Length: 126
Image 1 (tube, rainbow, N blue to C red):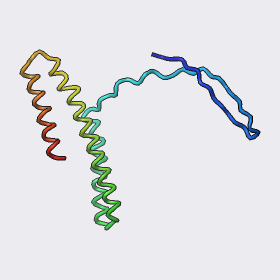
Image 2: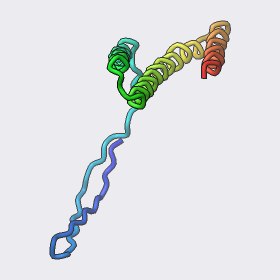
Image 3: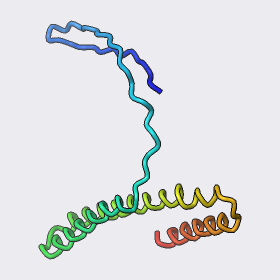
Image 4: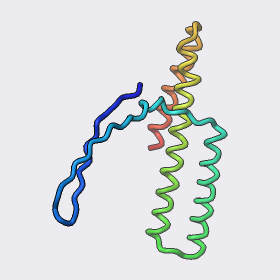
């Protein structure tokens, strides 16, 4: 859906005079649903994370300041969490949603049990 909007721009000049300019502007379409990344696309991020880990190893060898090393490690943890979230989202919106829409009650229950097991496992590690 494309919406028309009226924008008011106010400008000031050195003399302190205000000028108002009215302008019609078309707004963008509503954002579409976020695209899920494929596992291959996630590999790009994992390779970047791999480079970050090598960088931390070099920082340790170079006896860099501990706070700098910890900052980089925190960055790596965040990047891994984003990859993990992306893969989990893909699994839930793809595999699990597909099974729940299917007819087999056995497959539905397997997917539900699988997700519950994952959540239980994730809680133990945090």
